[in-house]
Image 1: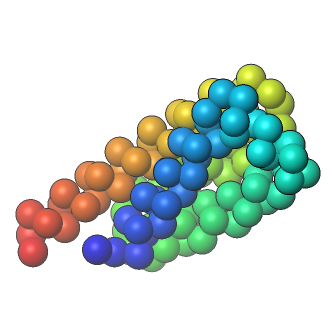
Image 2: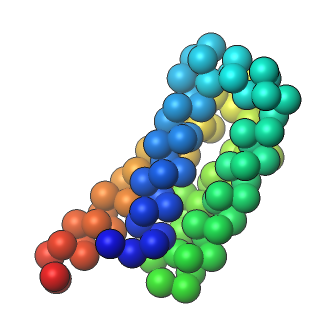
Amino acid sequence: MKISTILKWISGGLEAFWGIPLVGGTIILGLYWLPLVFMFILHIVTLVFSLIERKKFHGSIMGIVTSCLAWIPFLGMIMHILTAIFLLIDAYQAQKENNEFA
């Protein structure tokens, strides 16, 4: 499995967690928005590996935007959920492609 695929599974799972109503927002606020900084860095790393491996990178771009705007309460939750969907679909498709040709 490619590094970009692994990073998409990780970042997609984390984004899904942050999108859980009340739970994700409470933890992000309790940690003074540091998870958003961590996710911003993780999405940049995922983007770089996706570009190097010539894989889809739309989810990573969306994740970067989400990390910048997620401090807005309801918008952040919606964006976390949408970003998780995009990243997890990309990861699934990439893993499926790798397994078919292996």
